[in-house]
Structure formats: C-alpha cells, structure tokens
Length: 470
Image: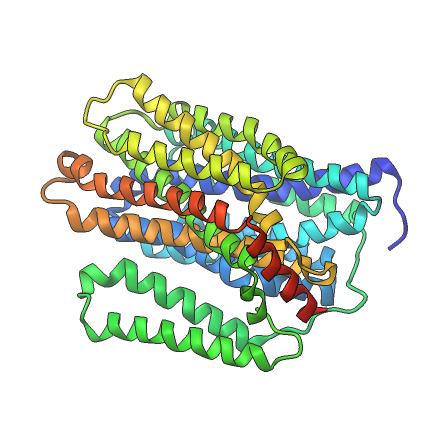
C-alpha cells in the first residue's frame, strides 16, 4: 500500500473510528431501551437477555475469522460489507414487529459488527506505519470507546423518550451510509502479505461451544436444568471444547493455538477479560431495569444518572494506558478489580428509594474500575508473546471481552428470573441482590488475577511459551 499523506491518514483514522463509535453506541443504547422493548413487545427477561446476547455471541464467534478473511480478500472490501450489513441489520431492528424477529435482526447486525472493529484496527496499523504515530492513532481509537459509552446514555435517553426505542437502531443507518461512502473515496485497499488460513472446523467448534453454553444458561430455568435439551447443551459444550483443543493442536495455522494458554499472563488475561466485561454487561442490564422499571425514571433521566460512570471511564482509560506503559499491568488491574468489587457491594444495598448520591457513588466507583481495566487486558495477553503472534493474542483477548459480555447478561438475567417471587417491579430489588454479589465476585477475580499474572513465575511461563512459538 503506498504511503499516504498526513491529512489522508487522519481521514482514514476518522472513518475507522466512526465504525467503533456506532458499535459502542449501540451496546449502551440498547441496554437503556430494554424496559421500553419489554413493555412494547411483551418480552420476558429471557428474551431481553437474548436481545443483548444474540449480538455479543455472534461478534465473539466471528471476530477472528473476520480478521482472517479481511487479510485474504481485502480489508477495505470487508469493512464496506460490514458497514452495509450493520446498517441493514439496524434498519430491520427498527421495524421488528416481535421480539423474536428483533433478536434475529440483531444477529445480522452483529455479523456486520464483527467485520468492523478488527478490520478497522488492521487498516489503522497498516496506514500509520511510524511507531509513534501508530501509537497515537491507537490511543485515539481507544478513546472513542469511552466517548461512545459517555454519549450513549444521553443519546439513547433522548431518542427513547422522544421518538421511541426503534429510533435507537435507525440512528445507525445514516452513519453507516456515510462511512461506506467515505470508505470508497478515501480508504485504500490492503491485504496481508501472507494471509492466515481460514479454519472452518475450528470456527464451527467455537460457535457450538459459545452458543451451547449461553443457551444452556439462559434457557435452563424455563426448560429445566435436568431436561434432555439443557443437559444436551452442556454435553455439547464439553465435547466442543475437547474437540477444539485436540483439533487445533494438529493444525499448522490454528484459529486458537492451545499453547497460548500455557502462558499464565495470557490465560489470566482471558479470564480477566471475561470477568470484567461480564461485570459491565451485568451492571448495564440490571441498572437499566432498576432505574426505569423500579424507580420509574424516564429513559433520559436514567441515561443522565449513568453518565458519571461513563465519564469516569473516559477519564481513567488513558491514565490506565500510561500506567501500563510506565509501571506494568499490575497497578491498573488491582485498582480495577478492587473498584468493581466495591461498586458491586455498594449497589447490592439498593432499595426502592435509595438516595441519588448513593447511586452516583456506586456508578462513579464502577466507572473508575472499568476505566482502569481495558488497557492492561491487551497488554497482559500479549506479554512475552513473539511479535508474529501478538496480533492473534490481542484478537483472542477481544473475543474474550465479547464472551464475558454474553455470559454476564446470561448469568445475571437467569439468576434474576429465578429469584423473582411476585410482580417484576416489587420483587426486583431483593431478587437482584445476589446478581450484584456476582458482579462483586467478578471484580475479586480481576483483583486476584491482577496479582498472579504479573509475578516473576507468570512471566517465566510466558517466556517459555514464546520460545515454543518462535
């Protein structure tokens, strides 16, 4: 790919950030709209879980294969297809006449979403070739995550209150169309010099594992935990996991190299990503229902109350990156785990009339913790890996974030449903208490693994794996 001028490079960065912004905005807005979707479409808690998890599951399943496909057939082409599918899925979500069709259209949206962020990152790294400029571009890219979270609650609240929940999906359509046009005009095509082979068998096994686990958790209570369907799901999960390890060990270019997991920092980063993003998705799911269905706040009021959490994420995410660069991952991970755990404990004491300062305190603490979390996850995952494998390790860490987001909603929603004893509004608070304790446990896991993955012994395991991979 020929060297581009600085203005053209910055324009490419802006176009790529557009994709990240609408995907990040979508996740925050949809959580805020859950109560409206519930009342308008008569959705159960399980259907609300699937409204979120159908999206995150598809993204988690396809992130790595989308990156490999883009390297092979062209990054710009794949990026454009992703934008079109995301825009089309968003349009159809806005017209969905039932919750089942909404879930199906969310899956189409996610197929497009899986082609956006990893491919856009590849475009950025190939556009900004100077190390310092590339680091700055990636810093801007990371900051857009916080910005989309900060803007999402307010934009979502305004849209739901003024135009209805369907408008939260329609807002993506013009943005996607503009991004497609700008991509055609300004983003050059690029491919990997040596593209990784696509691994269809590994891809199918990953999908079976993730879908089987999530379906079993969400539908277990209604179908019966010992029913043939649910037991079959969990048997499928074990069989897929064992088959994946055995099959990938024999492949020359595996989708998921089992040797990575012999590195304690890499394995720890995977669990940290799952735990941290499970806490985030569980928090957003519970909090949206609590503020609107229990407290009776409007969508806009709920969004404004959540804004301090997102603002703390915006402030502390870049600080976390600087600490990781100067001092390593331990300090941010310990702070992140501690704050997530403390916020879970604070929010577990919520009542039907908790004072606003207490609410805001819990949200501020959670935002601080989550803001410190993201940067050290990728840093820990690639710690000690050879340069040739760092991209794959980072992609697995990104997949783990989406897996955590799916599991958080699945577990919290299932526990909540099992503990509801009467009407939703009156029994929500006591039913949700155990859910907040689960979020506290996720924080404690991040805290513990923050210590374990940054020890001398952990670094030694990473070095040993790096030697094997080299």
